[in-house]
Image (cartoon, rainbow, N blue to C red; front, side, top):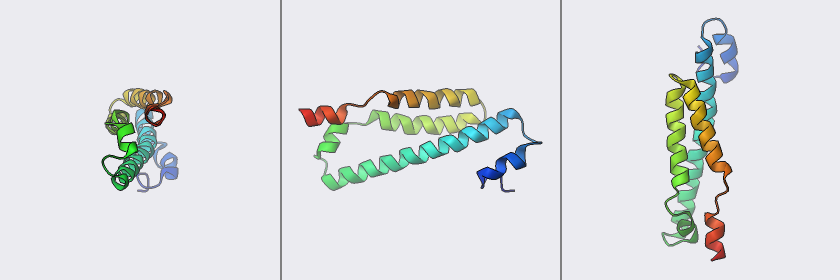
Length: 114
């Protein structure tokens, strides 16, 4: 009853009935859900700051189209959907997003330096 609402009950509810794949999918969906929520919050914050500064703001010019941020949102959403069917694919997607963000983003420094 509480498995979907309280993560700390998941082990107790699923220990005897769910397969390992279902447990893995549940874990990855929880982890990706947190990352997706953070990505959405960052996206909203970024747009609020740009809106406050106007369309010609320095942040808007520095970020450009923000492909990296948009790809992250889509990848997390696809990863959550795939976690039920192909958990290893969702892990690969999450790893790819992490590696993508591990590479430093120099757009803002480059814009401020010029």
